Length: 359
Length: 246
Image 1 (cartoon, chains in turn blue, cyan):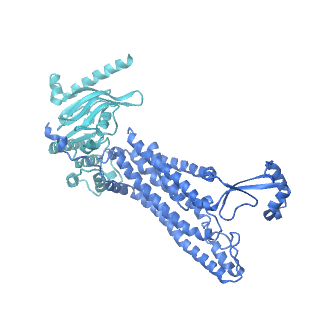
Image 2 (cartoon, chains in turn cyan, brown):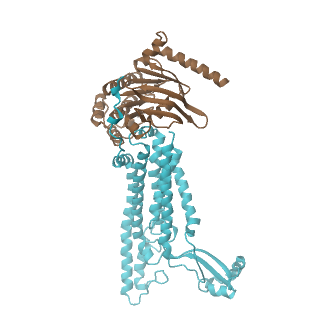
Image 3 (cartoon, helix red, strand yellow):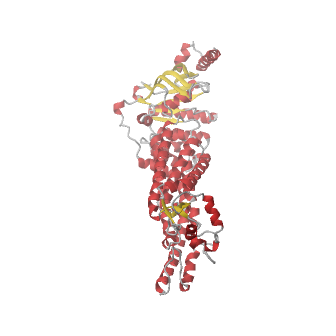
């Protein structure tokens, strides 16, 4: 027993924290396999989008060139493409990428119409597979007893795991969605589709990246709460899907008060129609069923063009509520904003749970 | 000088169950201290408090003069948890690198030469090592941190007799060479005097006995430490049973 075994406090170097860069290396070393897996998935998708996207742009450019060159060509009408017979072949070639018409590209079912739906699964999967194991594996295997007692300390170590991984998956997702936006752009530019449908809203702008971040944060949080990798991944998949569907079905349309109009449906220019109802021509309430009864006698042949007149004849007025296409970016930022806030909350809660965890 | 000083230390799990109660003890520096007691006696709780894995409900615990769990204390304390948890999927060398990057103090050359001496290949996956090799790797990592205090939770439990002897010798050598202190827990009381210089006996979350092996022996008229410990544990178990009945 010697007093020399413990140098006096004054003799010690002041305890400095372990630098973030060194902890980031640890994160990289331990998660590079998961990142490589996620990276490979994204790379395959990106390669597909880049290759087919170029074909789409070429087809669209050829079609546009034809329209401008032919004196009798009609400009796109009502948001739908309407080429002359001269440009018809080129139009069909372009539209074949959308999976419409004979000899469509992607007859297997993978085309510009279905790709965004498939992409919606990416945030869910990447988040669960990268975020689920990040802390759960440590808790599950008992290595947290090793990791948390090293000089860096558990809070710093956890932050050094969550933050770089969150940044990387979010940035990668943003890159992929930017590529997808370019890929789908000809169909948006030609007015063939608006950007409000859920499969496009969720894969363009900042929404895709925001959902990926949220998914990652949710899975990491579930990992600390449940302490089992597979359980955490499954739980986060379920909760995320519920959150996603709830957002689509009932939350998103309420971000801003919709605009109400009467007359014809305000669709076709990228607006998002969220509701419709009937009143009397003077604005009074009517039994909606009575209107449907009147509709039942309405000749389907004249349905599209004469609805407003027909209804007026019966002293009814149809109202539409919609979110104008011009609000698209505001909607993107509102949704990304709350997803970002929720993700930061989840990450903070995760770190706090780790700090308090009796272990 | 004491490497661990606990005063009125208590840790309660949930509402009622105390893992450790009213524990006041000192662990002397510069020697190997054995923390002895039956299962659920509070050994792991005490060690977890010392390494900062958990925080006390009441009381204080200092490690080398620093509050346990503080950054300063973490830098001075190396912990090998039960079953020596390490990252199974990493090669030994990468396991060392991971540990190096988690610590400010790190003696890489020493770790490498130690593993060399033990014949543990650096390219081998940690998961493919034998139990004894794994324990030695965990000890190597702990020692490479150049700690003042080495804490080992049931280090011998999973080892076969040969690995156990080797491991014990390694710890004793390291303590002598580096002039550090070591505390290990065990529920096996046989041959303790060959491993530990100082013994602390825990029962039902309380300290029953503490002293150097020589002190414990002479206090009971030359009985072996093993007998002294067993009789203390028996007495504690009996009085605890009566307490529960009352």
